[in-house]
Length: 97
Image (cartoon, rainbow, N blue to C red; front, top):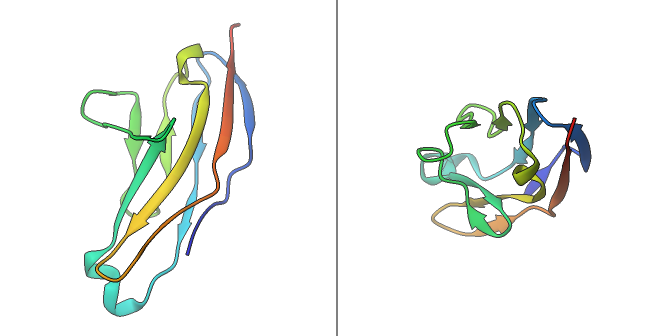
């Protein structure tokens, strides 16, 4: 099961954002669990989007100093050797200051 525990948010540009993802899986499948955040349906690339940080311990996504272009739909996707699931999306609106 995958769900985002964060709600839709409206923030100001330059604010920091944290999105929380709750993932449950069979304990035997934890070693094959992979969690990915999606932005507008595409995987977030943490290497090219340096302001985006994925926390491997709690599966949260942090966005430092949000920009208007960060507005959009975010979802959390989890997969293991048995199954895959995606959360309902949340919408983030970043307003100009």
